Structures are given as structure tokens and as C-alpha cells.
Image 1 (tube, rainbow, N blue to C red):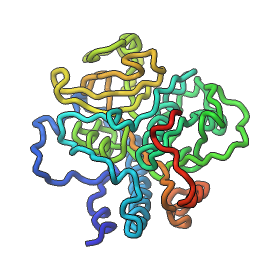
Image 2 (image 1 turned 180 degrees about the vertical axis):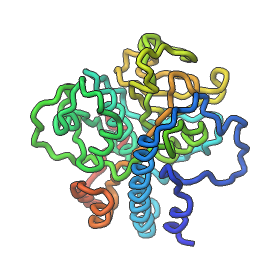
Image 3 (image 1 turned 45 degrees about the vertical axis):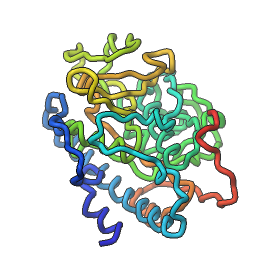
Length: 341
């Protein structure tokens, strides 16, 4: 069986490879979510399945192009040189690999755009070993979504990255308020994205860990409370947070790691959207399930600067997407991950 055929067998409804057997024993709570089940929502479930179907097809297309490239350049891709743990590991943190960018600070109610941008930055760094500070501003300008836009969310941002793209913060400064779009090339793209969920129900802890190892930091919804906003350090755990609006989530953050030894059940390491003055220099440790964290995590796969996808196939799957940027010649120098943003 070819690698491409194997991928077709392993990709499930969530767009992620199905869990395979291994020598490491799974923790007893691997299928737990530590969250109450969501109310049935057929419309939401259908939207998640549709997004994951497109995401799985695009992921397969990218994997095929990657495998073809590796046949001629077996040691060229930075991501293949990373030493990553199994999802059954007790703890893992992308920050320890220097694969997470500096926390952004949202200026308005656009946490959804900021969190999605942070996830794309991390994927771009992991895949290309190039550290860039990307701007959420093109999303706001082109889609005219401001702080009062209730319908804006991370899927909106990921779809924009897939079909149009973004630029660096230096070339396209972030203000948080939509204005007329700048005439700046939007070269930083996503080639695929999807939900870790297979439907409207929160995914098991194990599934989130698998996605985190495979794709890098995950954008996720979370229920904001004054206590969460005032977090300054340590393990955050708010099992019964106030929820007057009855929303499962109303804020967005980025999961960058986990530690099963923290607290009663374990905890996620989360990157915020409030800059480095919040929490532990912009990060927090939050118990599994607290404030509905990881209720709807999303993965994103940034474009590779080493190989190109078949343009016709990409356009057929990602309907309405602009052509992906051409890959630079191998002679052009790379900006390594040790370069400051």
C-alpha cells in the first residue's frame, strides 16, 4: 500500500489520522473530555463534517505533494527533523521546541482572528523553519468584520487564510478596526484546516493531543469569565464558571501543550490573545474541561515554502481560492527560527 493510499485509510471524519496502536500504554482517561455533552445541533454537526471533508481532501493533496518532494529531497523539510512525542506522553509543549511565536495582543473584540493568526504562524514556523509575525488585519479589512461582528469566528479566519492569505505585521499593520484593504501581497496561506471534533460534541482529550502533535498549536474556543481575565499564574480551574448568556464558548485562544500531572486530571498550556502582560507572560495552564477549553479545537496547515501543490487540484477542492504563491528557488536563503520577529 502506498503512503497516499494509507492516508486515505487513516483519515477519519475529523480530517485527522485515526489512532494507531503503539507500544505506549494509553492513560485511563484518554477518551474523556471532562466536559458536559453538547446539546444536539444537526446544523453545526453538518458544518463541521463539511469543513472536515474539505480539510481531509486538502490535507491528502498536500501530503501527496510532500511525499513526492521527499523522494528527491529526503532531508530537506524542517518538520521531518523534529523529535516529537507520542500523544500518549505525559507532557508536551511546543514552546520548548521554540516553535511558538510571541503572544499577540488583541486591540478589539477580534480574538477569533488573532488566535487563528497565531495558529497559522506556528504552523508556518514548524513547516518552514521561518519565524514571521503575521497580521490579522487583512481579515478585518477584506471581510469588514469589526469588534461588534458577532458571527466572526476562527473558521471564518481559517477560510480566509485558505482562500486569500495574510501578510506580515510589518507590511500590513494591525489596528483591530476594519478599514480599506491595503494593496499588499498576501503570501502567507493555509493549505488545509479542520476541526478536531467529528461533530458538535467536544473531542476526547486523546484526540486533541494527537492533533496537537501532528499539526502544531490549535485554535480553540473557551468561555471567558472575569476570573479567567484576571489570571496571573499557576493552574487555572473554574469548574462551574458563570455563563449568563448560555454560550459554550465566547473567546478564542491557542492550545500549545499539555501536562497530565497538573491538577486532578491534567491541564492544557494555552496561549492567550492579550499580550505578554496577561498570565504567565501571555500563557496559562488550565485544567482539562475548565471553561469548556478544547470544546471546538481547530488545526491549520500552513503552505510549504519547499514544494508546490497541483494548482488545478487545489482550486477544485478549495473553491474560490486564489492560486497559492510560487515556491522560491532553493538558492534563496531561509530566515531561520532564531531570527527575531
